[in-house]
Length: 327
Ligand SMILES: [Zn+2]
Image (cartoon, rainbow, N blue to C red; front, side, top):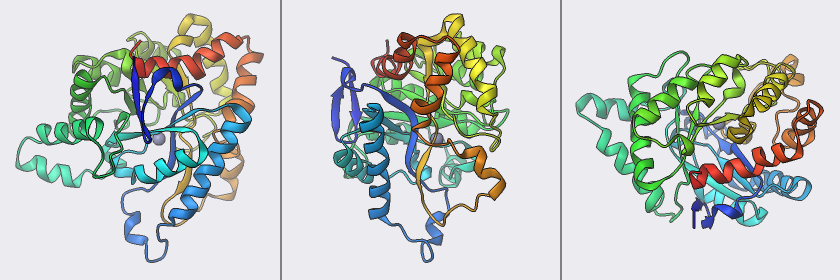
């Protein structure tokens, strides 16, 4: 039986059900910790927000599983994810791994790397978090998150990708990625495959940030899952509008790629640190940036474009299961 590590323990991949493959329970950019005198960690609020959001998704839309793509340098908090999962009844899968160099926290590893080869140290960390547990929580990571920069995969990032591939080869754990501003999707897939990863256990992320068909197909054709996981996030951080995205998604499905397509939002339920000051003009652009968007707007838009119920079911239920099963 194929299994997946959730924050409450191992379950059969058959029990994942409808899954959002790239979201966040919480997120804190490196440095937020230093602002805690003003904006302290409020565990109760994070849990309440998480439980409210996941309970709504479960009750209204049948959501059963939620992948928390928060890497080690985004303030991942597996114990909080566990409490949210227990109280909402939605499976949560948490990550090991590191974000892309520009917005991650690479100094610790860069210093160590300047003194010698750190590939064994990273391997030990990822491997332990996947097979033994995170710190003393007993919670195992269910995916490895890695990312690359705009227009390049830096040496620091390459090391993360190669280490992730090595851990996957030994454990089968899926690798999920961050691409920056619609670049390097095909290159990420190629790098992971070259390093020994199984493309059927790879999810190339933020592919919704580039509506060029050739870019899309160059990624799909390598056999990886292609994740359109910034839906609802429009006109910011290099994202196109959903209205530009829908025709491309529909075209890809018509070309036969439904069995490799994932949809999610990269939504952050609770930001750590002070609230973001999002300019008033930008608010309408992100009005639908919420994990209900898939069910309320995206699925109807795809259906209006001729996508069948069976294809929708493949995307929201079967593809996540097969990513974790390596099918
Ligand atoms: Zn994310």
